[in-house]
Image 1 (cartoon, rainbow, N blue to C red):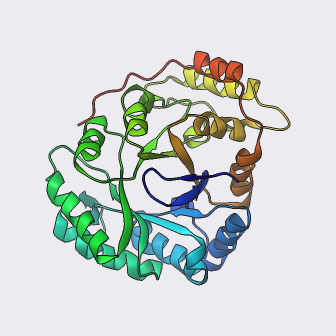
Image 2 (tube, helix red, strand yellow; image 1 turned 60 degrees about the horizontal axis):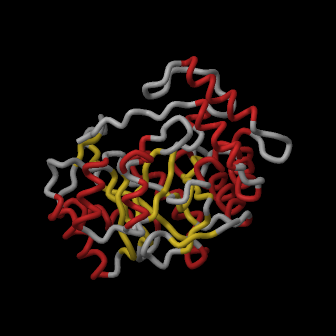
Length: 298
């Protein structure tokens, strides 16, 4: 397993990160999978207060309580569940962030969060107020660093210019290369780490039947999957090829992989030691998939 510093922080994280959102087992089953991931070298675990109405944080906290000093825990805030549980609303207000962190700390059974991330963001937000909340939590020692999870370049740009974020989590894969157009170079220039999610495009690049994805037709998705298969081999299967495509992008710090089963864990970990894609193979993959036109999401 390779480890990289996350942006301007001193967090040295595994390049394969454990996305806990997919966990669906009992606490005991989840803990067994998480401990197996640790044994394989994974030290970064990502969750959010939104996932399963907080139960995801609770299960992760139980699994990591006795191993707290060995791991880096990241969670997210900004989506507030409605009282009747029918859905959630966006809430980046300072008061809400300061109250929500207490719940996350309690569920994760820790007195600090390594990376606290804003789970979204719009230009209509009072961004300075949101930043004030994260800065206060830094002063209080409740979080070590903060970042943002967003695919909106205009929002990301504001946080780059106005805050001390150390990371941005965003979707990035062979089938979603939008970050290459406006974000990756900016973040690299400011030494802000990038946490890539969706690296296997919901399995469409590996073994799922072709289906429309973003602005790609099913036929285009099939071409992408075929290209991945064409450059894969017995030492680097399609899952590892898809992940290596992401990890070999210079700006990417780690791939956050949603892991629910031991088989998924093994596939993800294998990418860490799989042969690198050659320059020719990288070009072959890119040639098979035209770059998405990045809509300037607000």
